[in-house]
Amino acid sequence: MNMSEILQDYVDSTIKKIVDKPDNVKTVATVSTKSVIVQIKSEKEDLGKIIGKKGRTIESLKVLTLAIKNTQFPNDTRRVVLEIIEDEDSSFLDL
Image 1 (cartoon, rainbow, N blue to C red):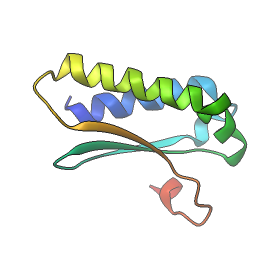
Image 2: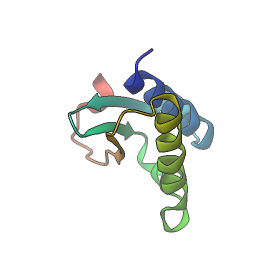
Image 3: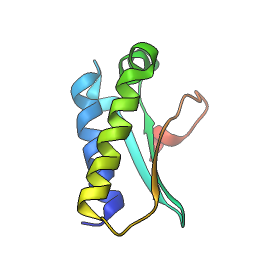
């Protein structure tokens, strides 16, 4: 497995354990020259659980995801970005 797959699987499985509707959670990882972006889409009701009070849950997930990248791929200097997709018109869930 490559880095984007490992990080996407970790984020996906972790978020599915937090939310009320795990079947509606979708994640997509994209790799660019300077970063690895993991996009998260879920039901609108579950967004609060993913973000957490004062953003603590999503920030913790970012720290853990970065730690996984740094231990599995120590020579990779790309940063890790987690994005929560909130656009209702997005076709993201159709992927």
